[in-house]
Figure 1 (cartoon, rainbow, N blue to C red):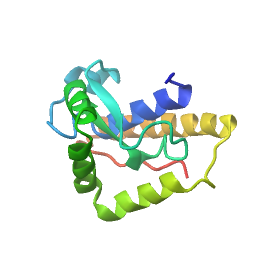
Figure 2 (figure 1 turned 60 degrees about the vertical axis):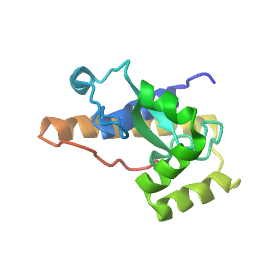
Figure 3 (figure 1 turned 120 degrees about the horizontal axis):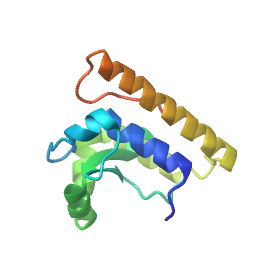
Length: 143
């Protein structure tokens, strides 16, 4: 699947929210923490990006290192159990309901608005880090 502008903006915001740290193994990309770019850390989606109603929802993604991302892709049952533990059952159920809600649809223009929203969230988190914030920073969902 081709990456769109909203995928790039959302991915960068997710990885910043986790402080460029793998949510599973805890490895950090120290260089990315200062540059905002990484070849090691990836945005891993809970449910596939094909589900456009949750494609850019913060609960549908985590920051993983390439190794953990590959391992979890190859172990869907383990991945599902980890996600439920990570999000908690309530947030997981809400995400699942949203995924299955066919009434949520976004136009291309709305997806571009999401990209702008997540670019703003990214810059806000960078500012917070410059003020001394560490660890995971939550971000506001587009809607």
